[in-house]
Length: 294
Image 1 (tube, helix red, strand yellow):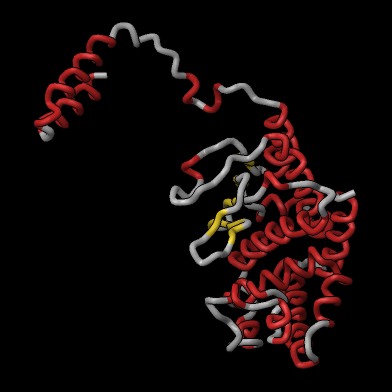
Image 2 (cartoon, helix red, strand yellow):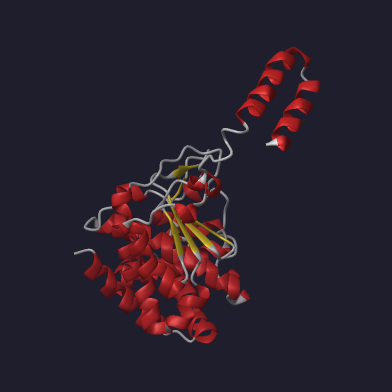
């Protein structure tokens, strides 16, 4: 209390026009000192807040088994302060995280083991109700930070029976997790030479058909070699063999050959770096998506 009073007095010395107001504030603090000694500020400590059914579910399904924290309550310091964002609706939290658990965590656990997921899974998820819009007209659906934190946007629109929307969300999850993997063990340098002249900062101006014709699985894959690599992974996992083959089939023979080379790099990377059969993981992921979106 004394520290606050002294700080206010120093501020007054540099604000002559507001001297009277500042002094009044100082005296107000002093006058309230005795009455505020027993003020309850326990609400400032998150540990003192009552845990809800959502908190308990997240504890049982994420924190305890995988040491993953899920933040769904509004925490501004976790988010950009120059964007207009909307808090998540609480009734969306368990349905969203249940689908993510079934279609991302469980397939990896089956094919790579619990130790793999406990070691490499991000330690924090932050949920946001709306999308994050950029000045160039693009929309951020998810982002990862240093392999430790994943932020998911557009949670308030979630409906598990809306398969295209669910796949879009899962694409983001698998995309960001693939970033974590290649930031831990880098993919082969030779991958960067498959389509070296096709990368562009204005990838968002690329129609799907143009991307495919250039040997890229999505327009965003043109953003950089890192994005190209993880877009291959996330597309193959989320779309499954049938969906992936349908995309490849729309490309020209030359572009198909480029996509096949990238596919071979992905499969070899998973086997050599992580001892994971990628095609088995792809099948398990597809089965999980089909089951979770019923």
